Amino acid sequence: MSATVDRWTTTLRGSWRDGTLWPWCLAAIAAACGYAVATVFHPGYLSADSNTQLGQALGDEPVNDWHPPVMALAWRITIGITGDFATMASLQAALLWGTLWVLARLAWRKTGSRGLSLAVLAVGLAPHIMNLTGVVWKDVHLAYALLAVFAIALTVRDLPQDRPRTRWALLVLGVLFLAYAALVRKNGVPAAIPVFALLVLAAWPAPGRRRWLAATGVFLTVVIAGSAGVSAATNPSPTRVYAVIPVDDLTHVLTPAQVRAAAGQAGAGADLRDRLVTAAVNCQKRHITSDAYLQCFPHPRPFDVTYLNRHADVVVRMWTQQMPRHWKGYAEYRVRVFTKLLFQSNQVFWNGTHVNAGARLHPEAAKEPLNDTLRFALQNYVTGFARDLPLLFQGWFWLAVSLVLVLRRRWAGPYTRELRLIGASSLLYILAYLPTAPESNYRYVYWPALSGTVALTLIAITFVARRRSTAGGSAGESDTLPTVPPAGQAPDAAPAGPREETGVAV
Image 1 (cartoon, rainbow, N blue to C red):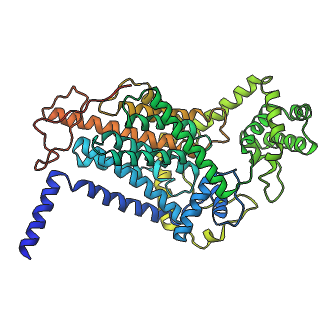
Image 2: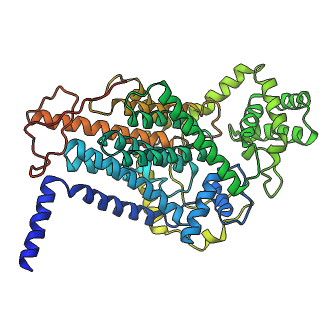
């Protein structure tokens, strides 16, 4: 028995010294952190949107496309498998921490530093990231799906050529995550395009035109087929929710008298005309600068999600007739809303559960109340940072980070192209809100905040690794990072001849 224990002890010590044990330690740390975060948020923080989608997932109300049917279907599947609606929030935490583990493992392989690999896991505990981890929101699903694709692409990029099955399995998984991201957020397509390019370039470093066309065709086919499959499974009622944007523009750019005249010119019925005029008046009286359809537009009770579907054509016609005539007012209004999104983002912390006026919390959610002790501890943590370090929760900061990532020609280390593409994804996602932002809300910049934090962490890791390499006598002027040394050599020791990995610039 003593000899067996000695052999195990020797083996473990050897595995610790040569680094083969550390990825499993990272996995255990990530699992513990993910479990702790899921416990804090249990059974999941619900917004009015997610409360509605919970009812759709449980079959208590019909599915409509005001909110993404794919999310309702995914929630329905998880409930069917586990029998518990809280699984969705736990799944979000598992996806985030699983992805961070993959990135931490890659950082370990590139640097051979345990501390730097732990820095990647620390991203999940950052206040501006952890604040929404357990909130069941489509914005959170988009962010975590895109980050998963990013981690998959970096993994595929470093795979040896003699593992084709693993490579193709990861590529298929990446395409599925990317398709989900495109379906779960209507304005998420611009953000998905650079991440799609990142995935293709990870598989084929120099793809030709035919390969680009083939890969694009496969991705579009998966998205279209996925959309058709979701529609067949959920049979969502059409709402044409996009019409809320022209309603916002019309009621804030035009005066109530101009709205009435525009409605008559576009052939609107008396009911729609009167409601639009009332919305314009209400927004003026209450000084509401955005989200007119939900905040100012008079609605019957209960809320009729099909109202816009019946009147969308007229609303769009009003917009196309009036906005070219009032282009200056339109531009000023959109800049006003966009700058508020960038500089005055609200909802940095979602305080549990909320439903719209006239609605009620789903009974399944009401049966499992939140842990107030943990909720207030989390709230103090997040709001304290929001007070002392507000730029973490501001859209302008993450817009600036994405611009720097895109415009810098070359980054130290092996991930120049990947950093620029992830920056482009964030940049396009933020700019897509310029003509469409319904209100100022931190969740609209959650993906840029997450991707920007990961990118800055990778850059910092590269910088520190190079400084250590320089101090140890390595070639400090090269854009290379030390890799994990061979078995029998301590990971933190300076290897005699580190293998160089050349950074790829776009």
